[in-house]
Length: 87
Image 1 (cartoon, helix red, strand yellow):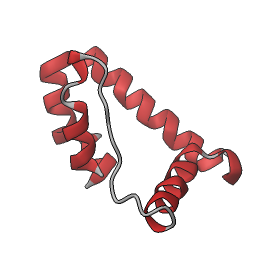
Image 2: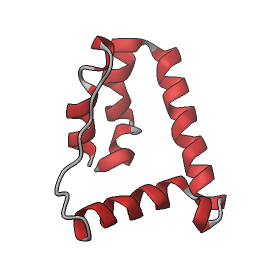
Image 3: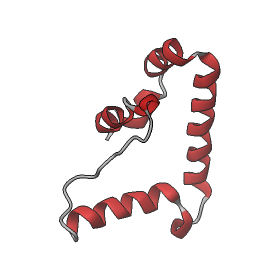
């Protein structure tokens, strides 16, 4: 589940049908780039680690059980449901 299912052949099929293969290639390049960053960046500068720690802090210490995703464009209207699905 999660991010890996989005990058699978089944996961990218809807993306490619909606946006075209060139966009899917950029999407997969971005996923590869963040994988490289995650495996090589020092802990204190590792973006996925820092975001995970912020999430734990917000839920465990601040008592925020949810986060707000506020798309600023009509083109991003499906972003919030997508993030909800992969979270």
